[in-house]
Image 1 (tube, helix red, strand yellow):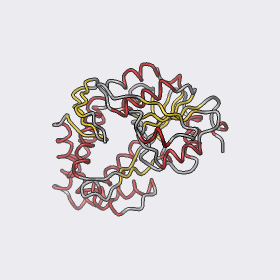
Image 2 (image 1 turned 30 degrees about the vertical axis):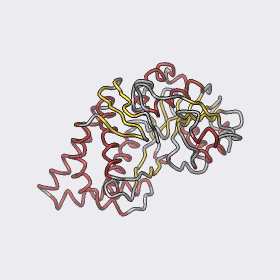
Image 3 (image 1 turned 90 degrees about the vertical axis):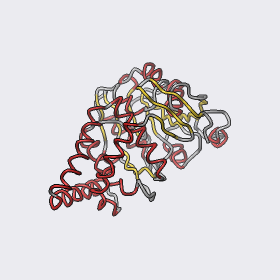
Image 4 (image 1 turned 60 degrees about the vertical axis):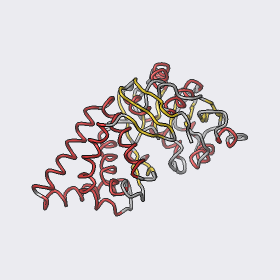
Length: 316
């Protein structure tokens, strides 16, 4: 099905990536002939430059990030190049599935014109630390889609008139989080459950702690209310487990199971939801206490929304 049946006007699909992935293969097949598919990388030697040759994708070289994350820097460069009336931002690290783009655009056509259409990820892993944390992740994704709270960088679609793109691009170049920043710039989010995707991650101890710092700093600077709400849930589960375990443990486990069923996840890890919440509380404290983290081969120090230092520029 052509995306022309979903929206009236041109479409730009933008994707920051240094490598050609399965997601790139999927989107090459889904972007309409007259629309744009823009890949943004860091440098001219990134593998995606050669891999995209001969495909409908256009590669934009963003250059080294200065005072922002590499992803924000690449996304800013792609958005500067994009000319479409409808913009779809996505990531390269998950499988989108058949007709993903057409489904996103159908939801965008049905959404109010001042909203961003998005969804939520469910991180999954066989790693030693993240695997037990899948339950709270699924519950969080369910709350995001039910309450339309925030956008996720893996799926962000909006009409050009809904966002001051020039201002958004300028601010991307001085921060770390693209999706929370966009959430702050639109009137609201239409979070779609059927666009939720599993996001495979390695789940090593180091990577999990780095991700915790990045996510915690993002919430601290752009969604402090949401951060406080999440902390209250964690504290309530821990307190309930200590005081009334016969009520709290089966209740939280059941809620996690319902969240899995809501997204069609067939994983046993919902059974670990209660110990995961117990573990999440000290991890939140860790995220609040730290300002430095590694992300995709670079190390950052993030001390304020627009106060970012790139400490290591030698991306792998």
